[in-house]
Image 1 (cartoon, rainbow, N blue to C red):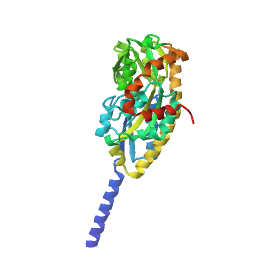
Image 2 (cartoon, rainbow, N blue to C red):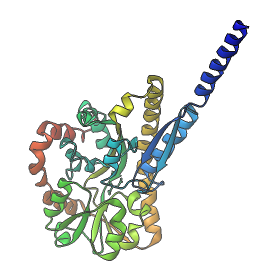
Image 3 (cartoon, helix red, strand yellow):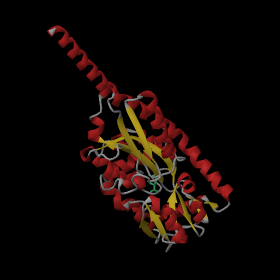
Length: 331
Ligand code: LMR
């Protein structure tokens, strides 16, 4: 009798723990971002979700919130630190509160093209920057490309003097503020979600963005001209909360790391094409004239903006700037 009670008890306990295992809640990863789905970052977030749910079914669930629908600029970093989201990918312009070294990426005319950006990001110095905020509980997992920025306005911008007196929306970056001040224009920090309305109502007259952001936010509908200036880069750092990431079960973390490598390769392969497609869609919409600069005109913009470097050189570190410049020469 005693034996059979024990057996029954053991069985109940075993069943209990089995159902506990079966019912174990999946780890939820909330991935919040500010752009549309059909952009390099938007596509990257969706691919990450797809691969995680294929390879870690029932173990990890990914929720993607695009277009500032959960947190917008300014709030998303705070949310990551509070554990309200687990992954975000802010533009490299949005980290200055946490590290000054990433201001490097905002220096105008630093990189000749996205291939040079890629070479620098893959270098030991570029990879080192991913770890520059760990003391602040922020771990960089990867760089994702968007692309080179173009200037837009309601008047044609061919030479630096054309920008004088105009109000330009900038991301939350002291470097970008100085860049427009160097043109005697007026920079105005504004979150990404507000840009369309800002341009529509005339709170600002111009902006700078890669084609994919301009088209997906319909900015071309409220900007008559885009100058293909390629004067700077808008790329992202995919980041997580260090404590959250390090606290994940090792097998899950290592699978997530592998997935991120795969997603990063895909995002960085497709970004340029997405920007070229967006450019073609803007041309087809016939709302906006795209201005191509002559080499002499582009040189004038470079000369006008370059003095900005000096102001940030000490904070960024001159060696880092030299390493980034070296990436312009393919080895
Ligand atoms: C911007 O604010 O213009 C960009 O950082 C938006 C983005 O995430 O591409």
